[in-house]
Image 1: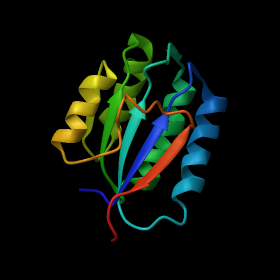
Image 2 (image 1 turned 180 degrees about the vertical axis):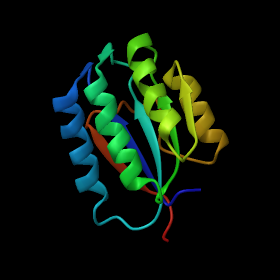
Image 3 (image 1 turned 90 degrees about the vertical axis):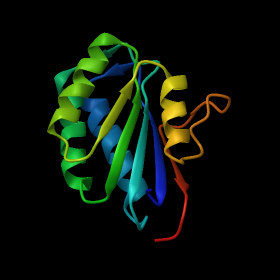
Image 4 (image 1 turned 60 degrees about the vertical axis):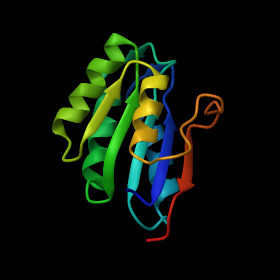
Length: 134
């Protein structure tokens, strides 16, 4: 299990500009954080994603590959899901992709991760939850 849960809220429209900005926000949040990470991507409000958005996350995935244990995603929209699969197929770590946040949260609880809970909407773009000391 990872030492830190990284919850990321994806925008409604994903393009190369906001993809790079969100990835930079993730980098800044994790820069001084020791240990390993499990990512929870909440894309339940996402309706579109362009290839530039996926490319930004491919680059981030390569940079963090050694520190990521797994990625769990809730993305119902067909185009954003297709872009997500593009990133997931290139990743060295397991990706678990679900259509609903409820399914993704159930998977997270079964894996022993707290914190991803639909009763507590993710308002900020990136939220870190430290689970254990490394």
